[in-house]
Image (cartoon, rainbow, N blue to C red; front, side, top):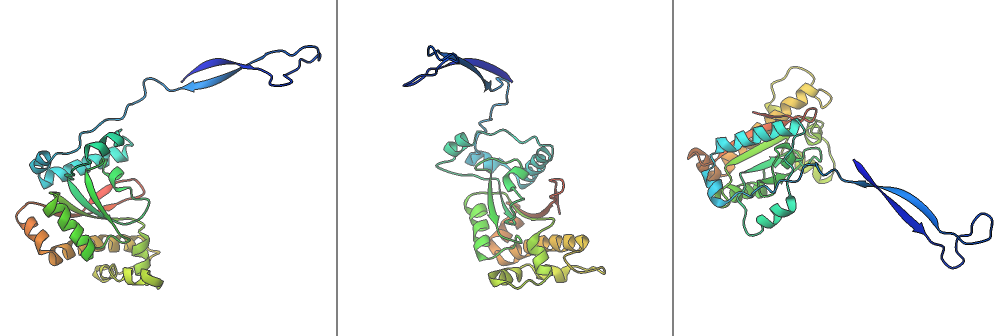
Length: 251
């Protein structure tokens, strides 16, 4: 990094700055160093926002491959340098996302970054414990049937507080009602060890079963999405995000 040295004249105001001998006012010169940005730094990429034609040409498998490649870049700290302001302007009048991701609300799961996606790339629905209800099912139907998304991804994550709370049967306000949506996954786990939230292996298995259960819920409770899947127009898949290394493991 380069620096530019500026000379600044510090001129006395009113009485002025007196010299040490007290005889005359003098002009004092000081220097400061101002950092200058390296001219070789990476410039943001103005990535083109997907058009309707480009979205239509994508297959569900291609979208999944793009997600996997993006996750590799995320793990390698090689995220695309995007010009988000430009992407906002490009997507003002329409949007043609590739997929919709159902994720937990956990602040440690940055969905777009995890798959190295930009503005206009994905719909994201978030709720603690990544479960479906009528509102989220309606959002998925909008994303796929109306807006043309090709993939529905239900993504759980390791160390999920909602899953642990469901295992512990936490009772607290509306949280208790929310946890009822996750509890079916607990009974789906065939496990002979300690069935509590302090056992990482058991928590992991419940997390996976919760993803699988919600994929089944989507297919059962949305005839519209099930029909699209049967026709090969979309794929409904699951994954688990590992906070320890940033990897998304597709189920």
